Length: 388
Image (cartoon, rainbow, N blue to C red; front, side):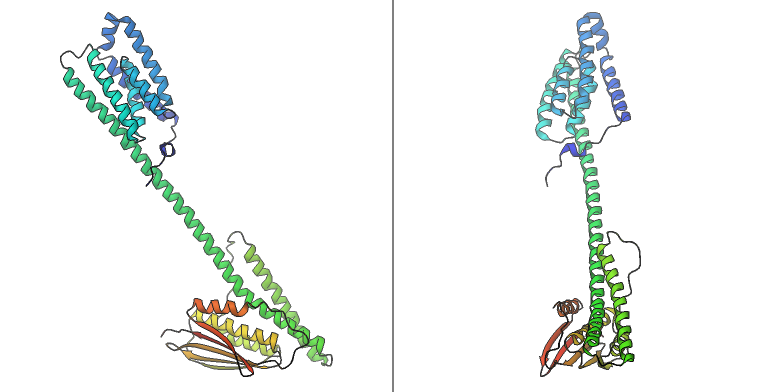
């Protein structure tokens, strides 16, 4: 796995973060310088005394650029700390900051320079005396500890950054999944309502065509046909408005979805077709138990499409719908209507996608939809599995 760029997980420092770092550097520099070095410099080497202070001030200024130029600042503070004891605090902070990047080429290079600087400090420190071997070992141990602390801090920062990124990506993916699920649900509802809308329009077109063709109808039949056209046109406009509202919706408004038809609505569908002038024979050979909701809805849509096709292509024929099956045997829906003899004066437009959509709907529940011409009849057969 590729290493994350250290600049990505470096935290932003607030004023209190800068403050405690400055205090820690001052305490560290003061503890090193006032351990006897400052007194020796003031008494025996006043130039070194003021040079030490100047080097410390320069190191304190340089350390604020450690994130922009980590290697350069670490090298500069290490060189200053070779003769300026007041630069010890900024040097430690610069080394820790460099180690948080966890780049071995930088750590090894600066580590070798720091080791040479440590040897030099031990040799020129006037307060060590004959204990220089012990002080050298302690200095090397302190240098190793500084680098180890820096690498630990960098590893922890990268871990937290990685966890935050994973959480952000997970939230984004969850939001994407929710949006996709919402879009899929809207499309499903739109397809459901498309079937209803096609049925309404076919009823309107059939009765309007009958009124234009049959000029000898009595006033009562003309009035009934006009009422059917009016009612179905009004329902079609309502359905169309709901479909457009679903497809245009940017967000979930919280409104409940329109109830979808089920197996129990099948008698109403047949009754409505009969009241519109169709001849429909329904033979129900299913078990008294209602099928599952998805199976019942699929069967309803197939019967609705069969009636719609009969409206369009053979409006003056008898449509026979047979239902049979039960739990463990499955559901078989068969719709038959004789083929139209001759050519009607006006054919209704078709999309050619109704049976394709029903085939996909049947496949989603593990069933099959077939259509064929048997003799002088058009036969539409739906087979659905109904578990025991």
